[in-house]
Image 1 (tube, helix red, strand yellow):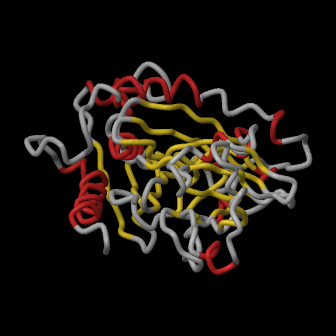
Image 2: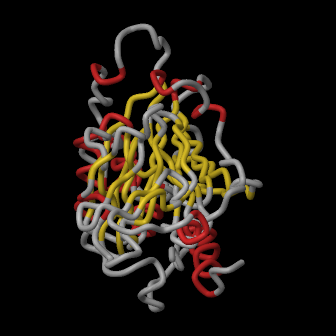
Image 3: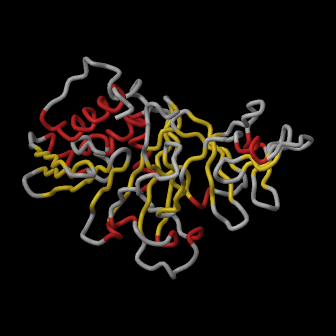
Length: 315
């Protein structure tokens, strides 16, 4: 389970997208069902009844807040424990042996997060200060890309694609400088959470970006938490990625989170990224003949981390 994305905290879905109870989702090739209990707490289970393998997401939530399988009515609580098997007189010891794998969950920065391992004691998520606070302080936007998640993640930590991929939009001035023979300087400073990338072009204008393992890139547009764009590359399966942007807003009292539109740049700029990333095959390690240069330092650090992850996923 989650062999190529193990023991990671990641957003699964924006809270505004949790419009059904229960609701199916997919993460790193695993089918998941999320459901809310009577107290409004969301839980995540593998979407497979242990009886005959039916999708639990086709069931319903009972008045007790348990998830009932549509096929034979077996019931499960948020911890994955079986709480009832209709038409059978099972004692407590027999019920205790029936389990569905349950994943830890958190509500963070306008999204439902899950931890990709079955444990009662997961580590706390490592978060930047800009993602702390109540859900109403954040607005989200997401797209699904036909690409491996590592290709999307690499794109978001790559500074030198800006003058060309975005040369007709947010980086038009960079395009002219690059075409006139200008140079860029890119430095990746290792941190406990991943690294901080500092990129400059023309000797003056620059960009700071943080990479938080495994799948978060943070673009800095100023000193305030509200001047950050958080970009998550969430693996759906080997060929699909959910790209989620999260932005913090200055005034949480300005209305409900549902009423706040995403940044006007989210859609068109991401579409530029999406088109090129979807043209790339496989993950970032698929083609060993790809050629790298000095300005690829941040992406090479990411590739090194990913290579270690997939070569020994238990570490």
